[in-house]
Amino acid sequence: MSLTAQAAEAAAQACTPVHLGDWRNLLAVIWDFLSLSLFSLGGGNTLLSEYHHLAVDQYCWLSSRQFADIYAIAEAAPGPSSMIVGLLGMGAAVREGPLWGVLSGVAAEAAILLPSTLVMVAASLGWSRLRDSPWRVAFERGMGPITLGILFAVGLKILRISDHDTPAYAVSALVCVLMLRTRLSPLWFMAVAGLLGGLGLVNR
Amino acid sequence: MGLDPAAAGSDAAPGLASPRRPSHRELFMGMQQVALSSFGGGLSAWSQRIVVEERQWLDNEAFITGLTVARLFPGPNQINMAVYIGSRFHGLSGALVALAGMLLLPFSVLLLLGLAYFELHMVMAVDRVLAGVITASAGMALSMGFKLVGGYNRDPVAMLLAAASFLAMSVFHVRLIPLVLVTGPLAMAWYWPRQR
Image: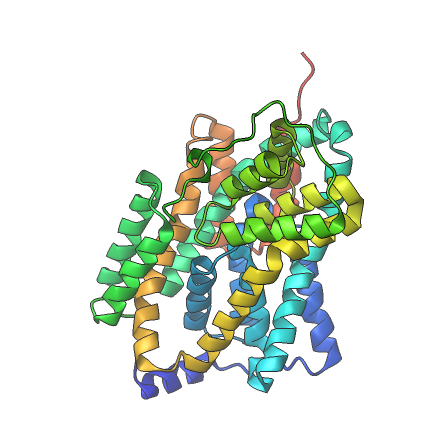
């Protein structure tokens, strides 16, 4: 992508990044992550659309293409891919310098993990009482289908922001099928696709 | 990547293991070992191998219960599992220590990758490679729903709920929190266990 195209994208974005130095902005951001924490059904991937909404549409920390990049980095990196929140936090403050980027990343990750961790501690300690409760049964069976629908919506969203032409869609479709039909590590798919990108066979 | 911890064999005799009670320090180190071993994938299998077979903190049944609880409650599954293990032995402080042990190294690596990305993503070669990588990660994201759909496709109400949630989010751009607050109670009412 040329510099003019990047400038065009920056212009199309047409919103200024929210500055975290203002403590009211900072509190609003922390509140957003704290409240999303308890809605991370099905392992946290259900939150990806919300992360995109916050980071790209609402606060303008990242462009859509940067979000797609960050998602890929979080998937490729070792450890739980839900740590993507740390990279969103970093994107919010890295303009002010790398130290602020790291601090902001740690703060965002702490905010997204704190409420769900507290609930999980209570659930672990009280599981013997919860296990046979009708609330547990209804929650487990009721939330499953909703999670399913949301995961399809999230997958489609990531696909839309990542792929823009036929070769890109073809690679994504192939990877999707291979994910379902084989037990190969996804790292292989990313490595091969990265090679295709490097050779100029797949573009944005 | 190629390693399958379950097939790697173990000297520990299953069923004979008596659970041991780890200290905070041992919790931290154990979770760090899980995180390190699973660089490249298979975190849940490594966690079982280290926590159940090697260190014998939990028996297999308690471990599987932990997986169930971790999947049921909000939060990333693997992180919830660390919280489950830690809180079993030392409550909240144990949970936080286990969490720190699990996240410290991978999160540091991720932040370094992030810094590298924000410094370098304007470099043409990096951008071109990433342009390829994101097509693969998009395919991975797309597979998440398909992976789960087999569990629900014989239940028309479940499929209706899934379709409604999908349409609300993708077509009508309803945000997650209001969506779950409306559909969640309806679904729970429908699936409330009935007396027979």
